[in-house]
Image (cartoon, rainbow, N blue to C red; front, side, top):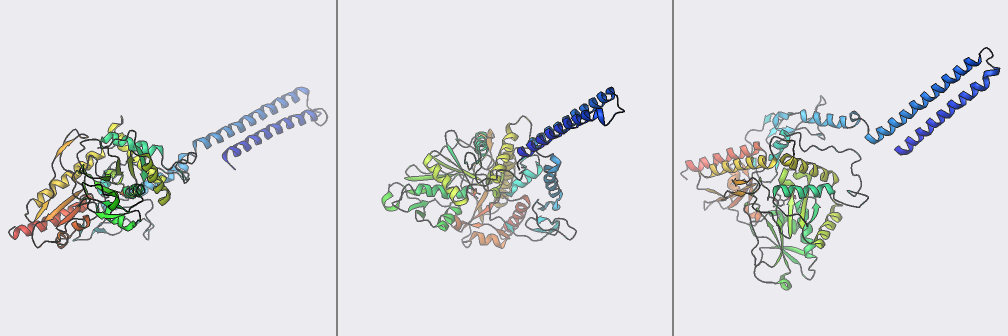
Length: 509
Ligand SMILES: Cc1ncc(COP(=O)(O)O)c(C=O)c1O
């Protein structure tokens, strides 16, 4: 029975009650002359009046009941009945401080003997409350996991929190009446965020949303390859390139396209080789340099702007390429939310990309869309809102942290001739309105000694795990360190690196 028919039933009950009242009134009138002879006609009148008043009062009461009931259905149950419990659970989880080296989440599973949740500890810490340091811990800086932003969200708890009731967008479609897969709110927030950062043109462009940038990159590559079915389209990138371009393309092993390594320039060799599809990250992962494709390249270009945000690189113009890919992961650090988007000029490609996302993963989780939307809205509000939100905007926070990490890396490695850190120059950033010091997501380091042919192995001897240059199609004389992890991880990295450099210096280098 739905709410409306339940309310309708209550209305019928009230009408019944009123009819009953009338019947009672009639009965007393009938009985007044014969069965209650002691009563005078005045007494009977009074009694009738009282009955009528009682009946009206009862009817009014019942009516108020119905109105209240319908009102409650509109407003939903009082906060204490559903939101209250969700908020209490979230607050209880957040109250567990885990010595600053771990978390209890609402869905943390492990429970101690006394029924308390057991903290999920960060790397290098252990114990039920994560207070035990694991001693000489390895600095694992392999993955570009953007955990540095965790501190921002924890110190600004008024931002980014989302409440998801049980009935939230349950359909396969984000809007079941219109059969839409993306919420309008998400694409609107994406456009607003780009307008705020000034890093991309979105007016008159199509926005396709996917489960992260990597899904979209493959969706785009496939869509482009299907435009040229006579040949296997070569997927190319200039080394050093983001290693996942190669890993994903070869893993998916398509008959329409395949990994072909370095791009070829200057000739339109589509019959022999197929139309090239070049993947290019700008700023680049691993080098953090701004890149462009030379004008004599013939083929499609997919610009990956994962790091083209003010905290990671100076914003010098609004990018306006035909095919642009962005990820939510490196903007706010919510990599696990798996949201990315492609900004496309071509409607046919937009349709192909959307179809790919729909057929491969049934679209994009509505919960993830909601969370991304709310977080983007809060980021925007923290910059343009009338009510100040958060202590500092996330772009300022991210830039400050990464700039100081870069400066420390430079200070440590600058002491040594054995290692060279990639060179990056300060540049004017339109977003900050001033010259912005380098704040790259990665440190790209070269080992200069002749015998150090594998730089990552050299680092491992010092307790540091980076990602070898070879994985980026480059030389293993290079190694990449992630600058994106938590502060504790960066401190361990800095300590180990300083020890390595100090030993090298003691040896006279
Ligand atoms: C250049 C580049 N593109 C894309 C991605 C992946 O983005 P997503 O998490 O949205 O799949 C990364 C992640 O490190 C990256 O470095």
